[in-house]
Image (cartoon, rainbow, N blue to C red; front, top):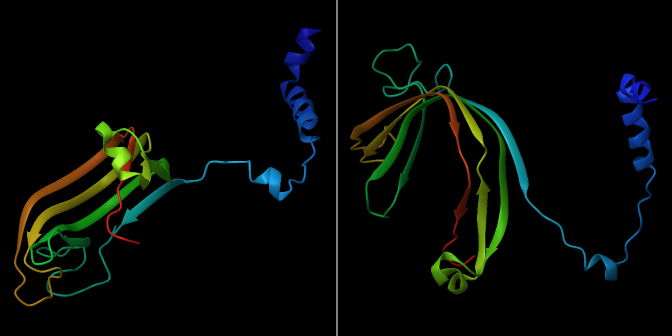
Length: 182
């Protein structure tokens, strides 16, 4: 008798699932629903390619990837102080893929050596995906006098060139603590 079940595993699974599928949904009134809690959050997977062939901007700084002396990738510039210089990720290009990045809001009211009780607020929690796959990823870390290469007085010092290929394992969570008043 056991052998006949093993011959038709999909049939057995279908019978079991159809039994479960007959469960009915019940209407919950406001009083009952107020006692129900769930988990919120977002689960993300992606495959991102940045400037595979070069950006749309064509000027003395940006161009196509095959033009010598030009930057073909994207640029991200930010300041840490209002009157300070700019930290730049420049000439960003390549592809990366990930599965399982989560995003949710979490309340911190304990832990962190007692600091959590003082903080007692919500934070953004990024659950890191297990594996991120990089393919021909390149970028430069630089210091710049201005945010854009077209701004007057532009000067940039490239500090480090980075190329990544292969898999990187990321584990744990990244917590983003908000500052200021919303």
